[in-house]
Length: 192
Image 1 (spheres, rainbow, N blue to C red):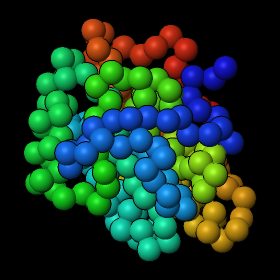
Image 2: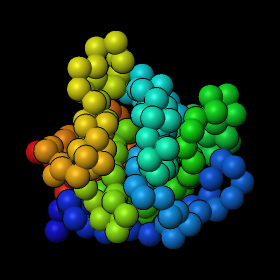
Image 3: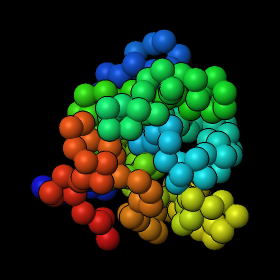
Image 4: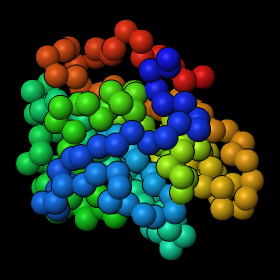
C-alpha cells in the first residue's frame, strides 16, 4: 500500500478541534468538493502561498468548494505550530478556511501527508481526484507559473478528466513528534 492516498480512494475520517472552538469530523461537511490541506504556522512555503490559497478558496466557494486546513506538526518539534499559535494566526489573517489541529498526528498518517502544504481534493463521493501541490512556487508567489489546484478544480467543474491528478507537494516536511525536524517515515516518498 502506498504511503499517500491514491486517486479514487475515499477520504479518511477524522475528529479534530478547530481554532473556532468547535470539533469537526468528515461527516460535518456536505459541500460538493472538499479541499483538505496539511499546513502549519511557520513554514515559509505555507506563508509564501497563503494569500494564493486564500484567493483560490474565495474563488471556488460559490461553486460549493470547502477548504479545510489541518496542522499536524508537533509543537514539541516546532513550538510555533502550537494550537495557541494557530488560534492567533487565524485571528490575525482571517483565512477563509477551517483550521484543525491534529495533535496525535493520526490524520496526517491516514492521509499520508508529506509536506506543508500538501493538498487533497475530494469529490462529492469523497473520493480523491487530486493530490499534491497547489502551485509550482509556493515560497515565492511572484514566481508562480502553474496553479495545479485551480487547474484540477476547473477541469472537474468543466466535466473533464483531471489531466494531472498527482503532483509532488512542495514545502517543509511534517514535524513528527519525538523526531528530528527533518525526519520522514521510511515509506514516505515522492508521488511521481
